[in-house]
Image 1 (tube, rainbow, N blue to C red):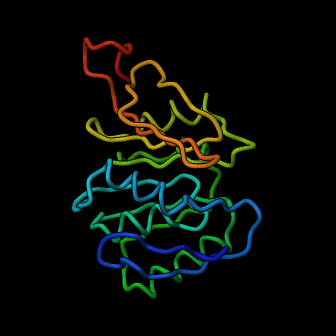
Image 2 (spheres, rainbow, N blue to C red; image 1 turned 90 degrees about the vertical axis):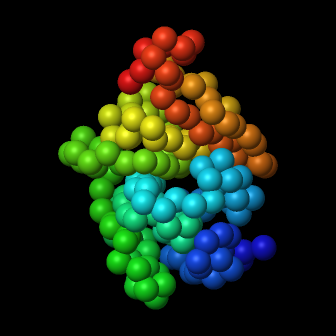
Length: 190
């Protein structure tokens, strides 16, 4: 089991590597078991995909995606020291495929124009902002992409989305959403 302030990459080319991150109170890394399930849902090989992690924190989701072949992982966080540590970790791993942005998630989404194959959305449990963040993330998701949500309680799929998978581990409820097919139950696509 990873020690506090440390994550372990669980799959891909960096499998087993333990990486440290700053001791900042708001950082809540996605647990190993949850990451393992999430990346099973996404498929083990993310070669050629791009990801966006809107509350990067420890960087666990971005680094896991890169370890599994993602071409680009964009990590957004409000804390500059967290991003500096994440960039240093990427250098130690020998990758230049990590891109970091010091910004509020909502502000970043408002100015970003690229589309992403996978978007990770796991805000602090005390400040989820689902009503604004999910629609904004929807605008940045590629048509066949997946939206990952992590919360302190179960979430329903918003209009235009279907809940592809969901589960719970301890206090963490996690969900994988995909766009609803045209004409399928779940509303009109985003």
